[in-house]
Picture 1 (cartoon, rainbow, N blue to C red):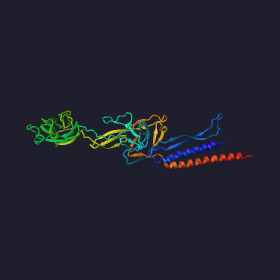
Picture 2: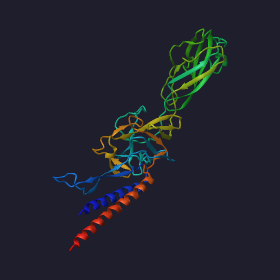
Picture 3: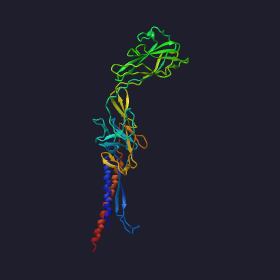
Picture 4: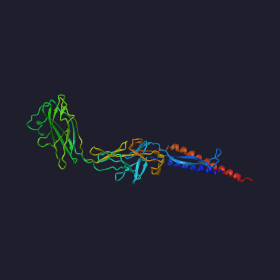
Length: 406
């Protein structure tokens, strides 16, 4: 009798209910991907075969996870990340690499970005110059060390010197405390190798028609000490600068306790028109030391640190990994998967590159389980189970009838 058909159907329906129940149980699990039980019919092997052969039931061929996109929900944790598109977070557990779509991260006591299980997020690290080097991914660690100071080296000055200004006589010589020895001045803050700030002042004295001298003082002291002369400047009849044609470098000076340094001035944007003296732009490239005040992650995975001195620095870049056959990944539990021969090798890269999705911070990806659909599937699976049970019951009744024949 054909009890095996009904029994196989009962087993298949029970397995289907297990899969549906697991989906329902994880409807609120961040990064969870629902599964689907897939079945195939079963036929006994025979030499004759042919169209008169009856099947002997069904079997489960696969439980395939559905890697469709889940809804993205915002959170209050700046370390939370959601992948919009293809790709998995690449995690390291003492060197053992796993993959996940759960972007609920936090920072441990050593500054590593970790999951609730302690797995460390990996990515590309910056080199000494702060540039990301796309080599082998490593565990991402946020350094809380102070940002080193950067001594000022280059200054760009865009000014207008009033062509109507009076000519300053050669005597007396330039004196920053005597306003009769110069026409105009401007100041800026510069930094030494220790990060200490100093006031650099540039004074302009008109020496002849279309000709000016520029003088420099640092904290009130002339550089060089004898004259303070930085450079001479000449202008054409249309008000544009003729000389110096290139940037000029000041005489060296040594701040107390710091290294000797020079300042290079670029006056290419300076003009001499018949208008009032004005400073249009004045920039310098130095800064003092800074402490990390926070960091943020961009859609491309770049982790940018913000410092108390107003500077920003790249601390790392989160990477994503994709697979040719994501359904070939081995589920490990805990929202993690492992690479297998069936899945293919991981294609690792920056978010937004190639076929990889982008990141959304302060957000997580919800489970992709459609609870309504799963409940309908549960009703269907229940009916299938009942029908197969009825098939076994009918076979039993038929067998009982045969046994009772006299």
